[in-house]
Image 1 (cartoon, helix red, strand yellow):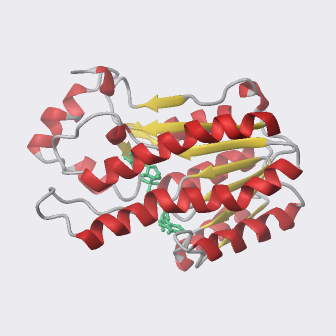
Image 2 (cartoon, rainbow, N blue to C red; image 1 turned 90 degrees about the horizontal axis):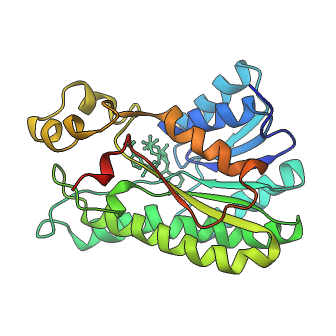
Image 3 (cartoon, rainbow, N blue to C red; image 1 turned 90 degrees about the vertical axis):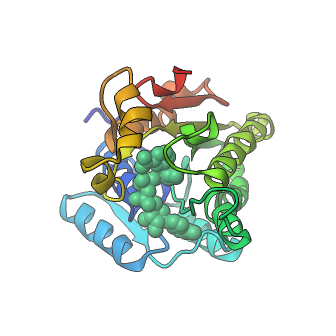
Length: 257
Ligand SMILES: NC(=O)c1ccc[n+]([C@@H]2O[C@H](COP(=O)([O-])OP(=O)(O)OC[C@H]3O[C@@H](n4cnc5c(N)ncnc54)[C@H](O)[C@@H]3O)[C@@H](O)[C@H]2O)c1
């Protein structure tokens, strides 16, 4: 590793999950001190134990429901106190419900907004005064190519809308954050292999093969590392004049009509 994040203090959400664990490991390896969280107690503890056993300096708080504004604020405040600072807020956590429009319940819609969009607003709102106080920083929000185009193999009404909201919110953060040295960017993954998606990718339905997997110009689905590579760049000073971009990480798939 090249120390691209030496001296950075990074807050990463959803560290118990597929991309979150990979992100935390890579950020640590690049020299960052990481404070993570997850709503899931067991996966948070497992990630912390695993990463510490690999020699990384990391704290992962479990049982943090970022869809609750007070929990989000408490985690952010604690995390900033842990290392007395904040340079990066990486909003990776999310959970969603999928269903066609006629079957998507109001509860499923609300659940998705809470756990994909509201939680980003809550963490950013809590981190904002700290980011200002410590002289700025980098906000990295995880979007999705589902926000950029229709998805044929699985109905994604609420998910696409929530991720579209994440992208729109980010644009406004750029404007309000600029004078304080706060940058905000989005990374939008396409179909990426994680423990959740691995079974689907191992035995994909025919429709998914036709409309997604066989139509990726670079010829393969993504790995968590593909996504995290972009996050490292956006967290580092290499991107210090980049704010408001949406890096699409999908093997070129979303350019196809
Ligand atoms: N895997 C893909 O193909 C793909 C594609 C596009 C976008 N994404 C996005 O990438 C990000 C990571 O995806 P992943 O595949 O690693 O997902 P994942 O489900 O493996 O991990 C997400 C983590 O977030 C946590 N989380 C969910 N709601 C939370 C809450 N309210 N408070 C705190 N933690 C909460 C979960 O417990 C989980 O550990 C997500 O934002 C996802 O929408 C993934």
